[in-house]
Image (tube, helix red, strand yellow):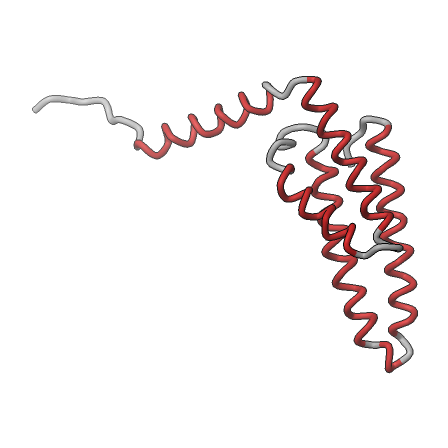
Length: 135
């Protein structure tokens, strides 16, 4: 009977490789790519602000977020992409709830609060992005 050293399961090797690959990808983001992603983040904040006048711009902004957020993975800008996506979806949710409750007269208050909350998130996020800080 031969004693053989137990081999770690194959799946553990893949996990280590995947983690290493993710770290390597995050480390290879150049300063130029960060500058480009920061510009995209700022453009999306502007699109979100413009949505008060032209509603379609918020939809364009969230589409840009979903397309480009993978490029920002592992950087300080990833928090901005997540912040913008959440601002869109929660803002939309509360706007729909407010519209549905307009007949109860509570909807107007919800819509005003939602509008103020969205403005706060746009301003806070844009200021953080301009200062090169994560959220």
